[in-house]
Length: 291
Image (cartoon, rainbow, N blue to C red; front, side, top):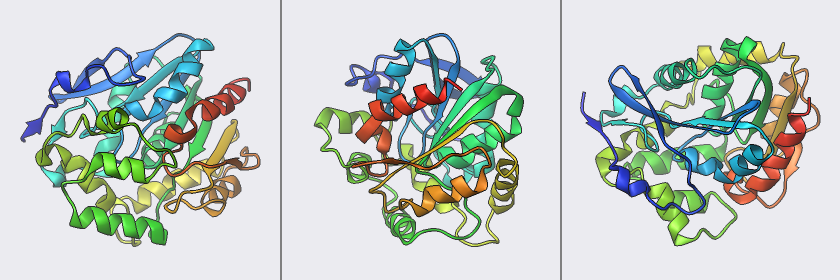
């Protein structure tokens, strides 16, 4: 299997980001993760086509308040190694590799924060490791069983026809913020060549858009477990996301999870609400951590 490893120098002097890189070897793949601070762990799962950098504005207030911030770059993203064969990437494999990194981090009473593809991966990890998880925070994501929004299909069609994805353009287009050029470069840093984007290009295509696709049974199993979830759960969706439109997309989780309260509306934010309203989201997490 051919693997692309992004040169470390591409991650030098990223704006707003000074976390120490840590690595785990999983079957010959170098997996990157961040583990900063002490106290109750907050485990954040990124999506497509982002990486741990997306959570920098969320992480700092949590660490300063005495909590531990943990986040793993999925295979093919961030500072993790990137297999160049697109068929290598599957829902099961993403979940397995992230799980194996987290297994060695001694996590207890963790708050799991998910967004985008981080939802199917992170929520699956949470329900498969309930003894380690104390709370859920669900942001702009979904669990797919063959039905998706028109906004998602537009994104899927774009990704399918543009495998050399313009990462900075995509991230900026999915925020309400005008991104500084250095911030856009930070999102592009992991992906200097077309071959390095294999995982990013494949992710939209493994979302199940009909009931016969791989992943449907596993996501339905996660839904089933969430329907009995009694620990605290926060559902917070932004009001300007065509992929997971407010309030419908978040309400599905509110209706599913017994312990979820009223959906929180993140005003003036788009799909990548961590970029648009990271500090505000950290405030909601800090209140959740009191429970």
